[in-house]
Image (cartoon, rainbow, N blue to C red; front, side):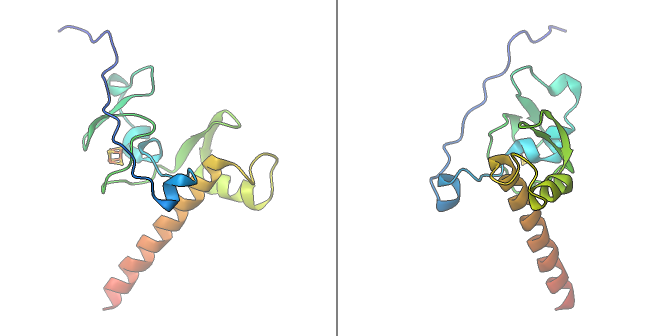
Length: 127
Ligand code: SF4
C-alpha cells in the first residue's frame, strides 16, 4: 500500500457571519470526540484529521449535527490538555489569562449547549 505523503486538502466551508461568529465564539470540530479520539493513521501534522461524518476536517471546521463534546481539549494559552469543567472552573476563579480567554468562551458555550440539550431531553421525557 502506498503511504500518503501530503496532507489532504480540506475544503473550508464559508462560515456565515452571524452575531455569534462575529464575536469569534464558534464551536468547531477540534472540540468534538471524533476529532480528539481520531486514530493515529487519520491524524495529519497540520491538524487535519478524519471524521466518519465529514471526512477530512480541520481544527476550524464548523461542527455537524453529530457533534459530541470531548471531555478534554487542548488549551492553547497554557499549552496542555485540559478538562472542559476545569477550564470553566479556572475562569470562575479568575485564573490569570483565563477570564477573557476566547477559547474559554467557546468552552463555556459548549457547556451551555450541553445543559440546554439535557434540559430539552428531560422535558421531552416528561411530556
Ligand atoms: S464533522 Fe461532526 S462528528 Fe466529525 S468532528 Fe466535526 S462535529 Fe464531530
